[in-house]
Length: 111
Image (cartoon, rainbow, N blue to C red; front, side, top):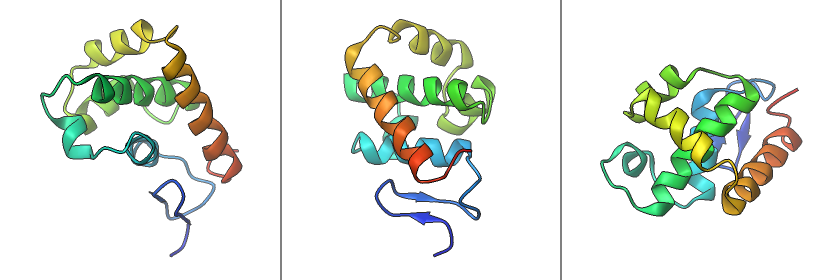
């Protein structure tokens, strides 16, 4: 498959393209969850953390807006932005965000 990154579960048409969908898929793969769970009303810590990581990566790589992410994961934009700020100092979030950033960059997903 062209542009497949099996280790992250990312599918892209062009390996140099980064998309909101690629970030969501990478986070879901890393957090061992599904997009359906992310979109659900569940407030389990793992899902809340996954949403926060998505918001942080979207901001970091500027591949979309909070509005775009909110529409994609069926969440309120303000809630996602607050999550991102709330978990900024969380060690687990920092570790996961850094790990995914390095993997996405090393897989040439971002220039």
